[in-house]
Amino acid sequence: MNHVWGLLSHPDREMQVIRGENETISHHYTHHVLIMAAIPVICAFIGTTQIGWNFGENSVVTLSWVTGFSLAVLFYALMLAGVAVMGRVIWWMARGYPQRPSLGRCMVFAGYVATPLFLSGIVALYPLVWLCVLVGTVALFYTGYLLYIGIPTFLSINKEEGLSFSSSTLAIGVLVLEVLLALTVILWGYGYRLF
Image (cartoon, rainbow, N blue to C red; front, side, top):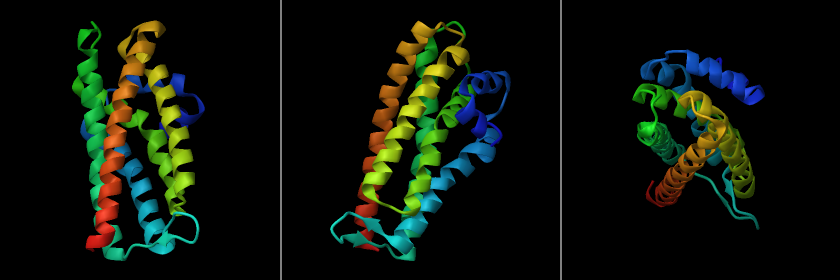
């Protein structure tokens, strides 16, 4: 958790600090990813069970506690899986570089890069669709920026190679994010009807 402020205020220096640490996957998950991924889950649970999704024109959908809790658990599992998938993607894409980091370091890097996306989940406390989309888009752009800054430092490559690597990684990450969002929407939509 001590890197969150640094990733927001001085990401270049913070990426160098993160690279210098030898954090294990288990330590990283228990001290960063599990906590950060809980932010959007808890906020979405509170927002959807207490206020409800506001789709405009007096169309509000509120979930029951049981439905909200069931979907929150699934949403949490999907986010944890998303970080693991992105760590594997970064590790796989780095296979051609001489300074290829280990899978564990790639998972740690993916968890830190996802921090803005986790923090953007705070807006789910008041779940307006347009606000969630707007804040999520800003968080996605900042995540891309963290990738652009972190990849050259993390892989010890120049900025030009880092730009192409981070662009490819971001494209795959957006695809993974879209799949996760689609699964989330399907789960919330069916969950509303099933529970």
